Length: 541
Image 1 (cartoon, rainbow, N blue to C red):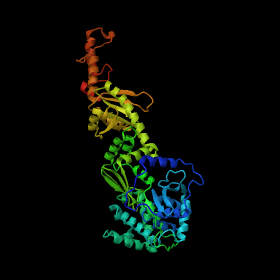
Image 2 (image 1 turned 30 degrees about the vertical axis):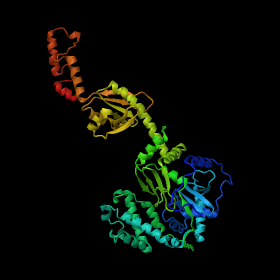
Image 3 (image 1 turned 135 degrees about the horizontal axis):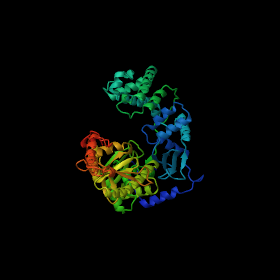
């Protein structure tokens, strides 16, 4: 009745190309009233699967006991169910994918993009789960019985973790004093005791009151916690919910009806779309596949990019799932499912198809990639323009504006980074390889330029936008500016301080010439030098 048992190896025939073609043909089917019919029993099996969250049925039973509005329960389910599931029942193989609009269900190994898939909206799913809970047909009796305690235990664990992340300041101020008997002696023992304490209305009210005081203070002073991963606002809501009147559910089922399980094509695709385990790996893979390569080159690239290793939560984020990658390819594991093994050629083929179908990147990832590409094009074009400016000013430090930054390249970048204490990085420039670079923000340009001028002449190429011509100008170094001032002075007055160019009307006598030099020293010629010596004048420039 069921497929191969857990731990068995999934067979890959028909061929990879035939599978892809089959999925594409199925997705292209125009939906009709009769294109897909899933029985209520099979829909109920999928609802009971609970997505891929741990203890999902207990979480649902606890949440639905609060009798919140249908819209709230629908939102809760949408957050709880994620990824996909493959179930095998008496009626065949069924794929489920949990999307923003509801649960996509279809016969076979894929449902996420099938036009003919049946979609159960989250509100409809909430209504049906309520019916199953009322009828004792959603969860096993032990799950229903333990659901309230499981909810309190989850809150106790989160409160314990938050309390132990208090900073010294928070401890000194005495926040959450009702937890004073927690001393980190034993996590299991203390969280169990706190779980029991949460049954006491008086303790619950005191904890809630003190937690609200802490939350008000924390909003004003984030230093009250050492770490900030805690979902503190959500925890407040969960504490408040403990005091809500509850609806009691019961169940006569010792266990939920048995079904077989398998990893769906949608889950395989989603796992591959996560990229490698290394930072930037997904972008590198996408960029590599943008150019033409042989199948072997694609496979070799992926083998090197993924390396040897693996990680948990790999298939639909299920805690028991795992991805293993090594020299032969990728293996996906999920509890109760046959393993899926793919060699690197098959991985490359699948990733290539995902990219072709615009399903490798999420819309947000694609937008970021496109933006980065556009910036690279601007930078690469700018680099060509930079080279022309650098050739015209070979001895200067050239600052080249790109957007809100002035970038510096090559040897200039090394010298500037050392003088300005900037981080030196590299960028791939077509035709030039990896080029050293650093940059300074445009709003601090003057400050950095003045520091550079202590040692270097500086040429600035401004471009407030990318449409107009650049405004290029050079500022001499302090030494060169002083040298230029000396040269200008000597050109006008001569090396001995005598004015070289005189007013013809004042050539009447040699006495006037001597008087001119005397007047210069006294400041009588109106030059503004007054009693300053030359060195004093230069220092004032």
